[in-house]
Structures are given as C-alpha cells and as structure tokens.
Amino acid sequence: MIHSFIIFIRRYVNRLIHIPMPTLINGSGELRQSAEILKDANSRNTFIVTDKTLVGVGVVKKLTDFLEKAQLPYVIFDEVTPDPTIAVIEQGVHLYQQNNCDSMIVIGGGSVMDCGKAIAASVVKNKNIQTLSGLFKVRKKLPPFIAIPTTAGTGSEATLVAVVTDPSKKQKFTVIDPCLVPHYAILDPLLMVGLPAKITAETGIDALTHAVESYIGLHGTAQTQSYSLAAIQRIFTYLPQAYQQGDNLTARAEMSLASYYAGVAFTRTSIGYVHAIAHQLGGYYHIPHGLANAVLLPHVLHFSFDNAFQQYAKIAYHLGIVEQHENEIVAAKAFVQAVISLNTTLNIQKTFPELKKQDISLLAKRAMKEAYCEYPVPKQMTTAECEQILLKLLKE
Image 1: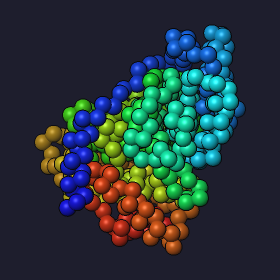
Image 2 (image 1 turned 135 degrees about the horizontal axis):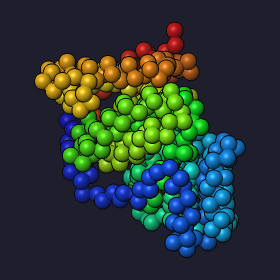
Image 3 (image 1 turned 90 degrees about the horizontal axis):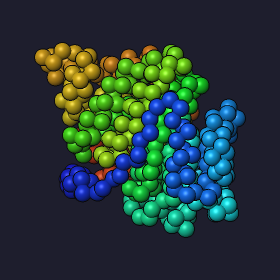
C-alpha cells in the first residue's frame, strides 16, 4: 500500500519537474560541430572524457583534429573503465581542476557518459561524488557539456542520471538531477561503424529495455510513450541490420536516434526491474550493463505479463507484429516472443557464467531495495520472485 501511494504521488510530482532536452545535432560528419559549439561558448580549455580504446582506434583523434583546426585547447582524460568507480571519477576531477578546464566533451559509451557527468557534478559542487548520490543534490549548472555517444544503447546523452560503482560494496549508486542532462548531443553514425557486432547487439537491447520499461511503467505520458514507440520501432527494424552489417550507415543512424529517443523517454518516467537486477549483476560481477539487460528482459516481461499485457499488445499493434483486430492476449504474447526472437537473432546468451547460487539471495535483496518506491513498475516483485528469476540464469 505504501509503495503504491508513493508511486502515485511521484507520478504527479514528476510532471512538475522540468527536465531539459539537449540541443540535438544529428547526422554523418556532424562531429565537426563540436568545435563551433565550444567557440560560441568561449571555451578556453575543454576537458575530453573518453577511454583508451577509443583513443587507440583513432575515434578521439577525429574530434581533436577539429578542435586543433579551430585552435581550441583541450585536455584528454582517457582513464575511464567499464562501470566507472569513485576513484576514477576523483582522478578526473583532479585533472579537470589542475588544468583549469571550463567545458567538457564526453565521447564514448555509457560508462564514459556516466563518468563525465559525475566528474562535472563533483567539479561544480566541489564535493565527493558519494555525497551527491540520490535525487537533486547537484542543483547547479554544469560547464558547457557536449555528449557524443559512440554506441547506440544507453541514451545517456539525453538523461539526467550518472551511475557510479563503489567497489568496496560491490554495488552501484546513482546521481540524479535535471542539470546532468547534457547541453548538446551529437549523434554521428560514422563514429559507430567500427563497433563490434556483440557490443552493437547488447547496447541495442539496452536501448530497447529503456523504451519498453518506460512505456509499460506507471509514469508514462503521451509524450514519453510516443518517444518509446519511435525507439522500439527503429530497434526492431534496424538493430538486426546494424548487427549484421556494421558499416550500414542508415542502420547506425536510426539506432543512434532510437537510443536517444529511449533516453528521452525513460529519463522522464524511470525504469523497472530489468535495470534493478542488472545493476546488481554489474556492480557485483562487472557483467556489461547492456548484456545484463538483454538476458533479463524476456524474464521480466513474462513476470509482468498479467499487469502489462495491454501495453505489450499496443506495442505489438504498433510494430505490425499482429493485426489490429487481434486479441490483446495474443498480441501481447506475440510481442514477448518477438523480443525473444530478436535476442536469438543477435546471439544473446541465456545465462551468466559469473553468477553464483550463493550470491543470489543478496543480489535479489539489493535489487528489490533499489526498486522499492523508486521504479513505477506495473507489477510488484518480491525478493523470492526475484531469486527465482536469477536461478534461471545460472549456467548449468
């Protein structure tokens, strides 16, 4: 009862909170716009957050070539690791301050985006990132901030959240504040052409999870559902193409837009049990977030079916999986099967070799604690039910 009441109140409070939209720059070769943005902002020294892989394959050089041509100084921080830790963020904050930087470009996947947002939040508040955990503790404008995703999955270029890992607790925490939404989002599909098929698949299902959890959650609005459906449609159409033909620019561009739309949607509605459980698997075993979501999504869809089948059916009708006159239950089942079939097409694994039976009780408790009164799920899950899902994911 308490849970339902809090979710009900938050639904209306959510609609009173203004969440800004980044200025969207979308298209092949639009990376060049980053230099113009910094010039307009009178940036004296920009801080580039990325990882060593992107530096090594030359993606970051494509950016710095534009900055050098415009005679814009920069500092590169390429120490970001998957699931960025408190220590990595503190290292970035120190380098930012040491070099008197006054703007930021974040170029990379979800971990890089999370790290950049966390560094910026720590800088403007002059506080350790742990103290900013939770809701609305930043409340201060970030320096000019450009987000350039190199994967089509997290949608972080449109969201108000940064996810941080605390290795001492083997757990993740979030920093959530509207001021964390980047000022600019540059979607350039040329940056994703070299993305491996496995990462393309996992990040693509991450975007699908965002869109689906946003759509079926209790905080959805006409606006967010429109964005969710636009994302879902693109993912089912273009993700298999991007997976099978990595140099297909149309598919890469459409997946970039799908990820962005899903980010716009879920940052206004929140997420659900797929993420609550995936966060634990990532924090505890360092299982990539997109992969965790991909494996979990069909299981959570099955769990929520009785309460969410009407929403599933609407998605099925929209996708054209079934005819509009088809029975809702049949349509809903067809949607769940379509997700399972998509996972199969993308060769998504079905179990986690890292998962240990003795850890399941703790993981389930942590997942339910994260979700309780936070995620507007269509059907509440008990710790025991969460344990049953995790047991199905043990490698035999």
